Length: 217
Image 1 (cartoon, rainbow, N blue to C red):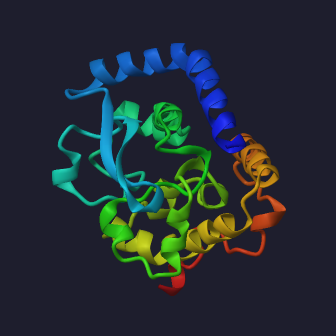
Image 2: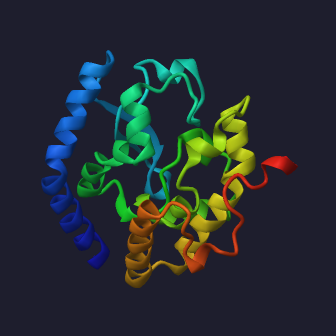
């Protein structure tokens, strides 16, 4: 109950404070390329129940028909505004509305597409016991997914080989250790990671950097 109360308060404050930024991004998206301002993709929520995630559209309008669910920095589907937003995670800002609605939390595993969740083992499905979130340990560990996947012949297969195994381990770590104190640490570490791109929190130093296995796959 306390976590939900904090989520509602934090998302409401965030929406008010960041509304000028979101309005400016909406104008830039609409004038930069044809299509809607928002992308509303289907994702697995708590207990696997599907919901529509809200993101600023960072790709061409028919991106889902042109490629898979993983996106590299050199993906031709990205718009100019979209590349900028993804670099600074600005495309994620509308998810504050998902948090306010109860579909997501500020801290929690990143919501996954349904096809990936369908392949989870029974152990991995324990991740779905919690609401998905905007940030968690896995998001801090893999803060630049587009860079890791850049140059891959098949970005989604590269994602499954280079990112997903550790990502799932870290999501299970959060599921088993989550608390208000852990949530506060995750938020603080997320801010530091944004400000210092090469910084790694102590909780993640035992995990190889994302993409470091590229030469062995």
